[in-house]
Image 1 (cartoon, rainbow over the protein chains, first blue to last red):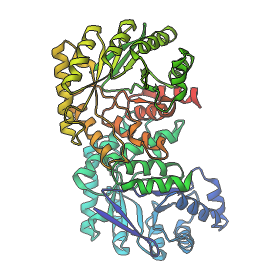
Image 2 (image 1 turned 90 degrees about the horizontal axis):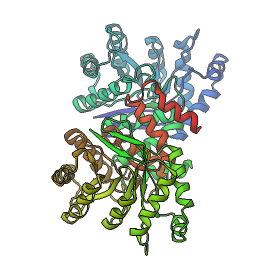
Image 3 (image 1 turned 45 degrees about the vertical axis):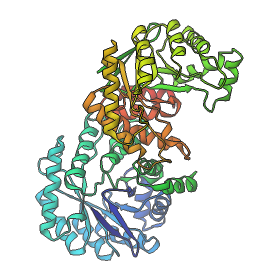
Image 4 (image 1 turned 60 degrees about the vertical axis):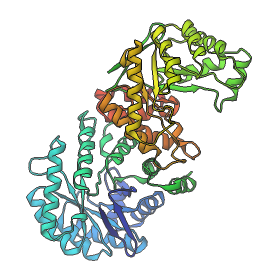
Length: 279
Length: 279
């Protein structure tokens, strides 16, 4: 299955058979005070710098989250999108819990964006799916609903199916729903990663959809997060993860290695290219 | 299933449900001229240094290979074993294609060793299995036979079964056969790792035996071997690899991360301990 995203002109194809597409996570105010302070001043240089660094490091798509306390993201999200698209021709993943901010951003965005995110709750599907339909955007579907986050891969799979079916009924193409199986902190629950890895396997084998996740969450509260994130990322990719939201400056070498190991990089072209330009 | 190895007094349990046990690969003359020259001089300080460094870095068992052109390994292997056991209380994996060298080493070795290796060829089983039986050693069974190395996971599984059955007939306990699914260079064949990963999955699910592999082979001829080896190792562990032969100085952090991700390290005790003692 193929999900196509677009920047101003550039097309990115996410294929459920790989290779892996990296959605850069760094435009996010969490633990980035400088992003908040510069955006509050109406200064976009830092957000553009974060974008440029991620693209250089291997990001194919950029997540854009400008949510912080007190922000008017119905103004700030579209303005950030305009600034990013004026400098970079890369598809964007619009990340906000506020459907009005997403809608305002889609109004000014060129190309075809990804919306992050809808979940299986009635209110969420009702709010986001029509917007995705109207603007021809793809959408991330989180495997949670009114019952919360359930530690059962089969139930998470069922929620993914529910969101996909509802999206198709709304007029969205099935392949434009990317499933997020929900990566949770392993420090809180020793089985957290196992549940998500099994959900990835089920979604990949039974639905065949593209799969994303905020893969850096799993190491929350632990040291050496890089080793943990990489270990989990490798296993997730093996099971069917195709477009993680992650920090390309930390993970691209491992992702290129995974693609090569999985027979998706003939003659090691992409792996060697990345090595040569980043050593 | 549990395979128990022993040093002079120390017992190492390899459990097919994990956690991962690392067999240190560094006592091997390949690309280690200093090992050859010191051993030729009858000087064991360097081999002892290699052993100590690997133990410090997280090795639970040490592979001992002293094969180089012109060597009399029927003398050198037992002598090296004695030297290692006089300093370190760690189980050894005796690595030689010469059954007489293995037998000579087992005669002087204390505890319970692992023999590396037998394969599915009649001549190999005939030579090594009686020795393993006589000395109560465990043995690594390579998934290849008279037909060579076949790129078919089901056929490799069948060879593993053949070796196990023959070992049991010889009087060796089933759990004392550790299967090696054969990791091959991905530079030579883009599907090499996929075939081995699937073999690991099959052996783990259908036979339940412990599984080893020389996991550093896969990156032969490529740059950034560390990223490739780690990616492949993570996927292998997910599928059922329990006792890789690898370089602990490069791979232990990733292995500890894998165990934590897979729910085998409650409260992250081993992961944090390794991090604190190696940062």
